Length: 196
Picture 1 (cartoon, rainbow, N blue to C red):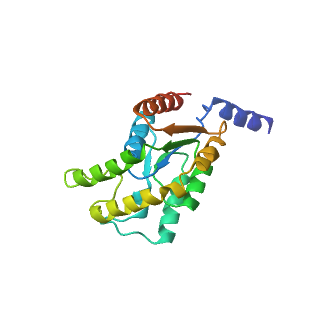
Picture 2: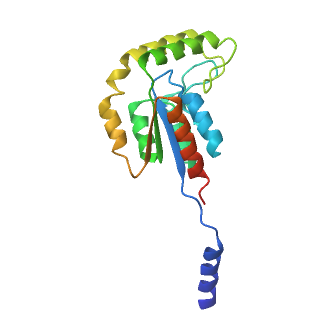
Picture 3: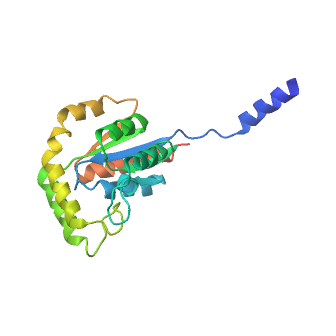
């Protein structure tokens, strides 16, 4: 019996320690470059990329049933490591905040958001938008992005930023508005991912 217990402890002692989970949530208003940044974070860290729009919409842009989306979303959040790109609803956002270990809020000047939404539409015949289902209805989606941007000050508020800051130090919280912010984020997360 003692020999068995000793063998179990020896096995546990010889098992290398597993790195802690790393779950990076990238979110913000439309047209802020979230998908591009999330893809760069995934490449820099080696973490799998999960794009909310690909969970929420089918090819062609049709929205899946709410239950299907929630099941897909819950399954994605349950994984030990990920980079999550996007925003679906306040309810799913809260679940994301609970599960993520790194929070990345992307906010540019308002005109930049509008211009990048417009540029995405202009370039869409040449280049499919990153993180969007194939054959998405670009005009309807672009108009929806404009409407969301007009309403966004109701949700993306200074109070929300304070809520995000309140997650420190238990979680890493980054606010991205410039290229230098992005570089600092990528450097920090790459170093974090390489820790034993």
